[in-house]
Amino acid sequence: QVQLVESGGGLVQPGGSLRLSCVGSGSIFRLYDMAWYRQAPGKQRELVANIASSGSTNYADSVKGRCTISRDNAKNTVSLQMNSLKPEDTAVYYCNARRLIMTIIQDYWGQGTQVTVSS
Image: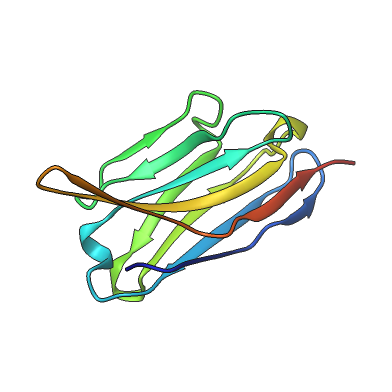
């Protein structure tokens, strides 16, 4: 079992920055691929960025160049630095941990943190 707790959301003006953090429990955090997803009202949950256990990263086109995902396995933490925020970035942001063991996918989610971009 992995428990994930997000923090860092809030209200920010367009063009501003936020740093989201997600702390995970468990001693095998480093084995999980980690990701940030978001869900805006009336829309499906979408991938924002992910970082594999190897450290390789991937970003949605909508946030490329504006967001950076990172992880610190010693602290069981994954972070998302978001810059040049736009109103369309407004959503609940969720932390996700995923690991494939043989044919079984272990998939864990945090409770979400609200990000609102508005003047």
